Image (cartoon, rainbow, N blue to C red; front, top):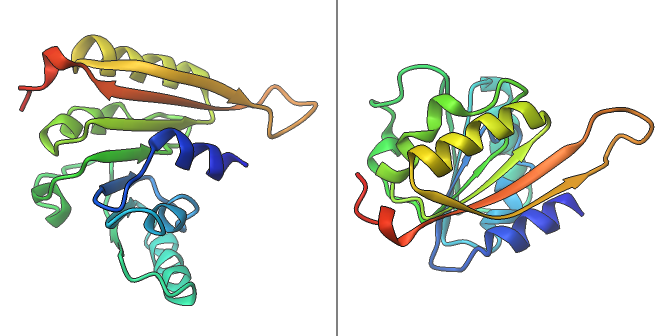
Length: 168
């Protein structure tokens, strides 16, 4: 249900190129690839990237590429940093995605779906997206995936506002 909700919110079209940061073993990347023209998944753990590639092969998905990169480190020389993407999905760990947010407008990203397991970093990163980078919060929700605990998964959808279209 969570993947279905993510696909619906991100509204992926066949002509879209999608960037999936913190992609893990392709939980979102592979379903995105069934709808998009191309999807690039990036993950810091090389073993997870290998599993994502194997999952893509096993599912006969040929339009998904995977890269290993420290998303909290220097990214300027990564090959995918020279590409353009219409949409992005971020599914960071509890520490959030603050370090990668500034590159999204430069890559042409107009629509971002942020999946979060920690509301505090989602709030911090949402502030940067809205007040620093010119995105607007369009939708938000919470899923109780771990009943009887305090842990929730959140999703927030951001779109570039008209006034920010000339950024980067």
